[in-house]
Length: 71
Image 1 (tube, rainbow, N blue to C red):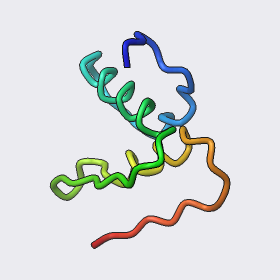
Image 2: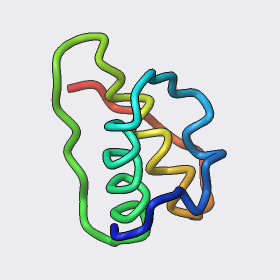
Image 3: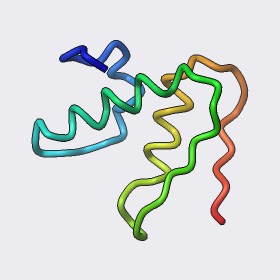
Image 4: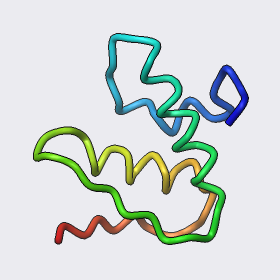
């Protein structure tokens, strides 16, 4: 999480943001993607929870199809 640039920016290609403050969020997402813990993503409708989930899956390097679950 101490890095200043993403190791795999292609995992975040679907995300659009206009400020550098979001970079810290993306760096965090990238750092947790390689872990084995379950991740719960919460937020209001339309904030991009599924995009974050897809980015985590992509950055994780795991094989298999991404399967979003809305609860």
